[in-house]
Image 1: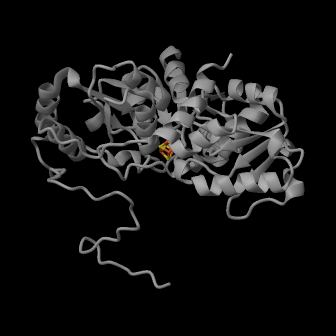
Image 2 (image 1 turned 180 degrees about the horizontal axis):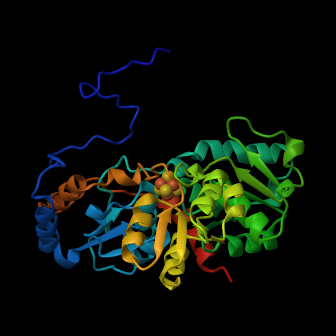
Length: 376
Ligand code: SF4
């Protein structure tokens, strides 16, 4: 099939960027009044509005967040504010879905730009995971397998886990979730981040790399390769954290004497193995808060957050682990013009870019989330 090429700025391909259509007047990014417009709209909406800002958001957006945090903390915060009619989620699509699942039916969750997705979440579609499960059934092992999905997955995938006796996990509780999973079944299908699954299994739970097998939906392993492997790792990864390399760790150690390398468990196994400290975004923040003045830190996570932490702790030498820019490009789609547009539309009584999860999916996704919340 021939793929049409469009001249930049003249035509759009509706299939290349799902959901980028923005009905209505989007303010220009250069509009000097944007900050004032956002402030006024927020003021007009008062307690009816609750703005959530993920740690990886741009500064221009995060300044309007009522609370900042990682995806799970933000969803919990939304659930704890039943009086807020509108939850404006400055994050990515799967996060807004989780907020919709955990809030009351009266509350409306808005994602200022529908194209703010997550490449990792998109690497596991419902149809692919259903097909994989059929392959496990054909291999005669499905009864021995429990699916666990990382928070960074679509509501469909969370619901799949709920239906099949599984649970959700975060980067903070992945070990506890896996311990629980192995108390239920012999094997785990870990979705969608191979790195978090492998790093937790090998570095925190003492499994070997041979206990893990990679499941590519495009080239599935043979039945005999799946049997007896404790961890069946979905072949997904984060396009941001997956960019850090073992060489970047070696390089920073050469350049900065005594540096502490602090990385997120979504980084590749060889990076995490070479690092001094590994943990979730919240862990990274706490670690830097508690660090000795004058100490040096090379941090392997999203660049907006690392830059903010470097500004927040000027008495510590905080640098970015890699020399190349590593923003989360999809998260960065939420910019001030989109936020202003979403807020001003709400002031006019128009709910734009509402994220809704259908009742059946929401029910089973909630089952998987509740299993996580009940973890010992
Ligand atoms: S940083 Fe990675 S996991 Fe997080 S939203 Fe961006 S692509 Fe997804």
